[in-house]
Image (cartoon, rainbow, N blue to C red; front, side):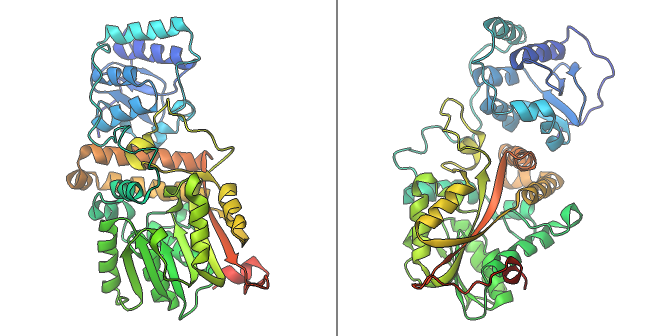
Length: 443
């Protein structure tokens, strides 16, 4: 990343100053960020860092996609860069307010004309630059086949079959790609917080020696290994990622648990060898989608024995579910999670209740995920050169932006995350759960 001392003066007619004024006209107020242009001129506010337009092509990216996608393309390719703390830059009030949500629909025509004239003055008019190689074309994933087995497998492979070494660099030794559980707040460390999260799940499921457990979306096998080693259970873990399955199988063997942990390359819909005493699904149902959620929950419950517990750990929306905005392409859809959907926790609970389970608990871990993501950002920045060697600079920049924006989304209450625990009632309507929450989460 670029590092350069900030000049103490600002020229009112410099490229940076004119661009800041044009942008402020479009968004209707101060940007609250500091900008450096390709000619070295600077303008704007002060804060955690500086946004850098490294060349004139950055202007064309914004002109041809005046929304989230244009900014992302500029950053991923390096046309737009930054100095300082990327999370801090994105956390400035106007960036948080505008990023990904501002459109030109409500902007007066005169302001648009002035902004376009400024872009033209500095070479912003011209052919649209090609998108980064890491961007998924809009036509790649068909709405007609959304959440079919083949398209789900393709979407999961896009995200997870990147490089196990790259994920280890970001996630650390725990290899857990989901929200950690920070018992001691930000004074703790990531690996301990992830171990505590795995144990929290096992306690909520009331695991005991001899039980048979299903781990839907098992990742690199961390929960399966923890449950088998610490609680004496047998685990079936399923994933659609070939690279995850290969490393998870290797880790299970290294832990001496091959007789009790089986890792399958299998769609959860194809698991038919129940019953299981408990089922965990951690960070997987975001790939299921609203249309398939009912079938997903129903199948999981069918695989449970009466009295068995089902824990679903998933990112959730906050506020009313918004309609899909086809006119405003999403960074997450085009670069990170094709076909992914985040739903309100109420929708998940409703789906569980409709199949006859007794929902016993819903716990928010929103603040915990903000801390987790900041730890991943720190890992990536600390190991930047290695990350670039593993996956290339564009993919590394994609992930840096993804993790930083997600950290702020959780910290600022734009998205949440919940663990929902349900029990499959027996024919008489009873379960083996104790009556107090403390009794079934305390080991």
